Image (tube, rainbow, N blue to C red):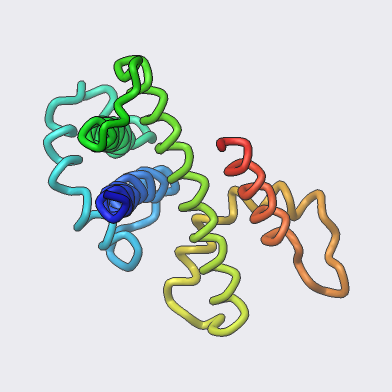
Length: 180
């Protein structure tokens, strides 16, 4: 049964992360023609496009990609439902499952956001060291810069090395620990 839980969590992690990435890239006005934008569109279009048609026009014209955020929330809710269903099949269904459903969904959404940011920042850091001419590095820089900019203002360079990425990774890890 643990293999099934792992597969369920992995599938929904990828789907939710792609929806959140799509929302973040649209918010940052990054074109989706290259990676990771093409991946995010390919994985989430089946849910985001119908949501765009149903959302009010005023929301569709705002800078926030509400359809992608709603898709991430719906996917997190589906994950929570499937997870509780599998726990029930395993004989460990919690008594207060209805109350637990939104809590599990929000927890999954926050965990995916924090872990997704960690992955983006790690890829950004590694690429900036080993392949600074990579075409995807510009996109990653635009995605990570709003998070790194406040830290770079606060942290001085140490021997010419920017430690803001390391500090951000530590802060994201602390967030994951607090999330439990």
